[in-house]
Length: 182
Image 1 (cartoon, rainbow, N blue to C red):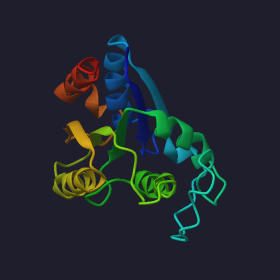
Image 2 (image 1 turned 60 degrees about the vertical axis):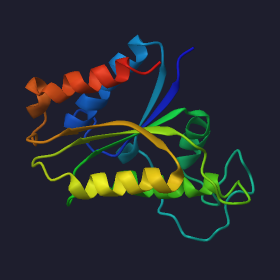
Image 3 (image 1 turned 180 degrees about the vertical axis):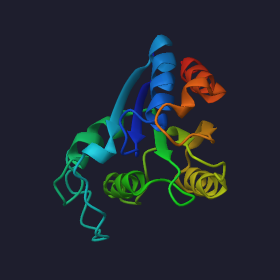
Image 4 (image 1 turned 30 degrees about the vertical axis):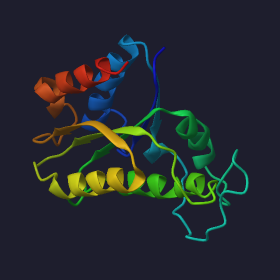
């Protein structure tokens, strides 16, 4: 039986280079028998976390704010693997991705000890340059603190305009990573 995978795509360009990487990953993952659900966060109405500690009272809708996160929560909770996908913005992940991820704290609030559900994860990023160090640092520390296991990172530099990625080996790497999940 395949795994359930959720992709949180923080790119505002639905046909951009990050989307090309997630499409290649999805093709491989579905080909291996997995289920993939991708959310294009830039098209969703997601408010920033208020830090109110008011969530967790309703597991079906864990946050006190009612917005498009209610579409993500049920998929996230049942997912085996979370893919964090983003272009590189100011040497880290996009605000769209960070905002959505911050809001996942409401799911942790459902646990009396504020534990997040344990997941496997993947980082997928595209950038004009090659400076992924800060994003990797954030991702690696996130994995450590949440107790998650990283299945890999696909980091593709040298792509800015839509379509720049079409000859990059990272597309094959993304497909292969998806295909390896079973």
